[in-house]
Image (cartoon, rainbow, N blue to C red; front, side, top):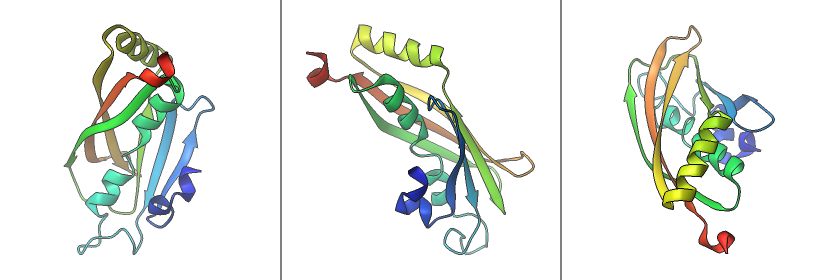
Length: 143
């Protein structure tokens, strides 16, 4: 369904692979007239957008309704121009998700930082991102 989300559908962003337990996503951004900047390379906002929701998705789906998961902060470092098609992958292991759940169960809330890389078709680095995700117990579901 993410592929039909209007900001993704019209911007050339597409989920091209995921696993059935939603702990892994691979996303593609195809350069097109809607996501090019004045220099003919990928608009920085599009590079960020392709990475924005996936760590939050993974945690929301896998932790369930007993937890609130929210984007807290992000940063992006543009390494080289995005030309052509670029890719990003997002993955959290079941062990990492269990560790997060256990920590939040003990302390009530925490912020977790996840790195992400955007690469071109040759695997060369285009941008590096850091996503801070806030996780806390959902008081309404805990009672």
